Structure formats: C-alpha cells, structure tokens
Image (cartoon, rainbow, N blue to C red; front, side, top):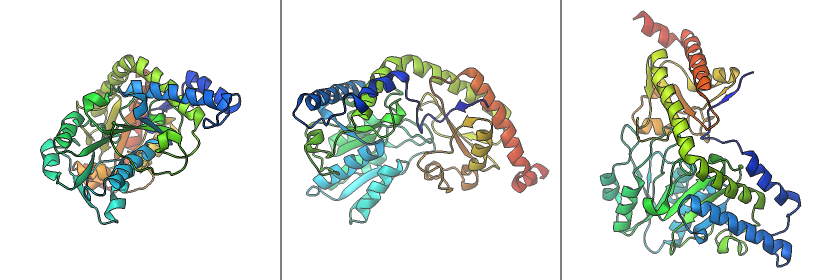
Length: 390
C-alpha cells in the first residue's frame, strides 16, 4: 500500500547519518561520562561537542545548552525552574492560551500553589497582540512564556517584539520553539529570549532527547536533583546516543534548511491552492502568510476529524487533527476555540505538516483521497443532508 507521511510536526524520520553517528555509543563507547578514566572522559568530550553543534543551530554558546529528555521537559524546566528560583520577586506568570500542554499545565500547577496566571488571548489568526502583553505585565510578574510557532495552526508569533517588552519591564521571557528549530532560522540573540526549548524528534533526531537554551545569569531551580550532570541543572546519567543524534541532526538541519524551506513551502502552497477547489465549506486556520513553511491546517464542515484521519489512514496517508499530545482526547481543540472557530466546525480539523521527502505527486494523492473521504463522511452525516436539502 502506498504510504504518504504528512505529520512531521509529530515526529520526523531519523536520517541514516544520524543513526550511524549514534550506534557506537550503544556498545563500543558505552561508558559513563562522569567517570574519570579514559573511556568516560572521552565520552564527556563527545557530549560537549554535541552541545556546541546544538548551540550553533540557534546562535547560542555551548555553555547555554542543557540537554533534556524532550521538549516537554525543557518547557517544564524553563517554567518551574525560573518560577521556583524567583519566588522572592513575585507570584505572577503570563502564558498564551494556545501554548503546548506542557506549558499550560505547568502554569496551572502554579495556580494550585496560589500563583496568579494570566492566559493571554490571541486574534483570529492566532497572533499575540504586543499591547495586550504589555498590559498584562505587573511588578510581581516572574515569567512570560509565548511559543515561537503553533504546531496546530502554524502561526509564527512576533517573538522579538514580545521579548523586548519583557526586557523593558525586567521580566524573564521563555519561548517554546519546538515547532521552529531546524525548520526555519532561529537565533536566540535576534529573538531576544532568555530561554528557548527545542525537541529532537522535530528536527530529525531520535525521540527521547531535547534541549533548553538559557541566557547567562538566568537562575534555574533543577527539576531533577542528582549529581553534577549538566552543570548541576539536571541530574542523571546522560543519554549519550540520543545526544549524539541531536548534535548530528542539528548540523544536517542547518545545512539543508534553505533548500528544505523552499521545497516544503512550494508543496504547502500547492495543497492550499487546490484544496479549496475540491472541497467546499472548508476554512484554513492560522495566519495565511506568517506561518511555518510546510504547515497547512483546515477545518472541514459537517465531518468529524478523527473519522477523517482513520479513513485517510486506510489509504496510507498519515495526517493529524492537531497537537499529537491531544489527538486522542476527542475534545474540541482549545487552540481552535481560542481563534474563534465554532465548536461544530472545529470538530472537522485536519493538519498536514510536510517534510523534505514529500513530493508533488504525494500532494496530488492526498488531495484526491481527502476529497473522496470527505464526500463519504458527509454522505453519512444528517447535518450535511439537511444543509443540502435546504
């Protein structure tokens, strides 16, 4: 059966050079980096070399990179680490309403500890209004966290503008850049952020590895207490093979980025242009222009998104209804509610995230099968039949 994978926001394939770089660290160089004999010290040097590679990808210094198990852990370390370390300053946090669950739930964790959390609304395209952020900041605000781009609707936020507002007010600013690092140019100095989270599976590294960038002099309370690993900011023996994979994938992503961006944007534009000709009562979500180059998201009237995904899967097509962390929740997406999509239309959401290996023939196949699946589901829908009869 033909297989077309268009869910690169959930996970990306690990390239052969990345796998080849990782393999020796499972059996040949298996020692503990914290040991003082040659095998351990040499592996420690390898870890530091990977830290430099990841840092280069985002314009940082190697000393500003902490390896984690995932983007979610990096988000938790950023939020909880800063807020716990800044208890004497205040008890107020600001996040947007469309953040990843790992940010939203970390903020709600502090709500239960009598912190105040402001959830910033977004406009119909999913953009944060800088004036709203400025108005939300108080003297007791400890942290602001706004994601760089949203995986569900593709919108890219004006992070440099938002971070400048926080800097002016002396507030630490964090951005979840899991959706952007490795896919579009990201420079922590141009963005002006104090902390930035990234994830291995989003840029061609294996699952189980991520990283947090932190600016010098940002105080972080560790989430995982242990030994001296990661300069005392994250205890536990390092996942050396995965860290090597992240370093190698970072280099490959940097080299391939210009060509990859052009390629996936071309396919995305082809998909967007043709889908409106083939399916009526369909609405594109997110900003039409200020969005991730390979991201296309829609809400289709009178169908249920989960059913559509299952039907496409039978044709070998992998897509999603939104965030991979929420795709099985069977609830109306908070992100779509936040941008004003009516609940009944939001139930018909579908997201295509295109990668470098996708082709124009695959886009055509997706459009063909999507049209057939939509027609089939609508034929079973009483709501659709009533609309057609009216």
